[in-house]
Picture 1 (tube, one colour):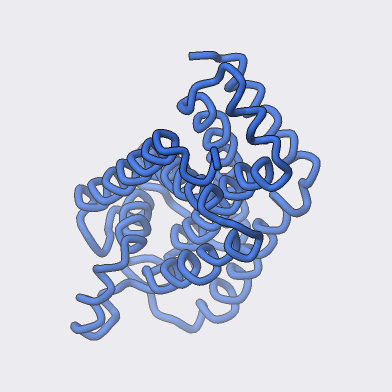
Picture 2: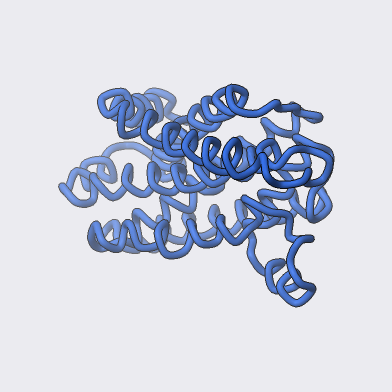
Length: 253
């Protein structure tokens, strides 16, 4: 692998983050902090405990996932779309760099940004609610897997999008609703039986459930099933990106 090429793409993408620090890091952390204030401190104090913890503590994993998923998709999609938009993608494709190295550079940078934001939100949550993590190793593992998986998904969207409107379409109309309906603010056990079954078709349920299990030792579905679904999603994204570079779909035409 051409480490220097991967490092060049990675450092370029990371430098863009530091140039737009307010938008890239401060804004999502501040938005999530508002959720903690409203749902955790103001409204959560009126609710009974959920799965043995206060409501404010219960929603922490869901809020982290909400931000990490949306940021992973946005960072990766914009990272690859912008060189397509200004035409510099052809210079990258004509350079002696393999598709694996290109994907590693862009997706690695997007996943790193999301991972850092996730950790900052985790630290911020301690300021608002008492927090415990029963399985810290698994918590970090789920966080890394989620950042990488959805950065790969964002990379696909960045290749697919023809304009900035399409670039925002999937995160706004698909990702955010799926996360809100995937148990970020509630346990699916609180839903009527019919809606519990329907909710299981939402793939984000398995991500949030597995991540919440790493905090409190309990989730809506088994941790094994959560890991299987994350691995399946990761494999589908990798397969799709391999097909994109093999066929040149929207990057060579």
